[in-house]
Length: 156
Image (cartoon, rainbow, N blue to C red; front, top):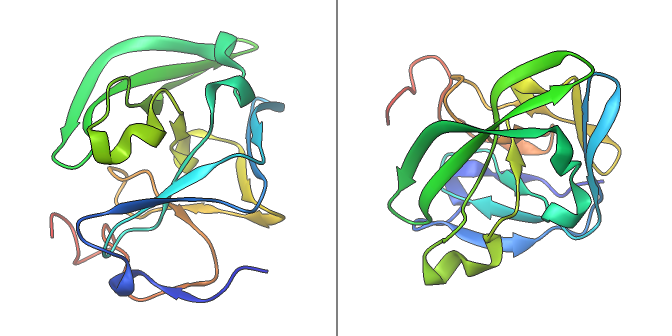
């Protein structure tokens, strides 16, 4: 069971922490990520982003794309399509190959958009996507507060 957390109480600037629960991501009926060594990033108003070590990801299912974004806190992110059994989810995952010193722990870890997966889990809890389709947070039922990306919350 996850403790109740209010997203407005998450820090700014963001912070990362170890995740005690098992994290899993399923795509095209295949577990593409499964770890007990995950990390998460907490940021005010956001659902947590969950990061999985590359050793616990089916990296053969990842195809690099040309998409890149920049986070003032974490640095340059690169993106990957997820391709399994003829199915492709575009820009379904991202990583930070050279993060800022504060987020060095995230180096090469993979995060997945819940909208791109068939299912994702924190422990035994199935997650939903962070609203707005531009954020990658995983929404669990223990989260309270207004999650950025919801109607009326875009670009805040």
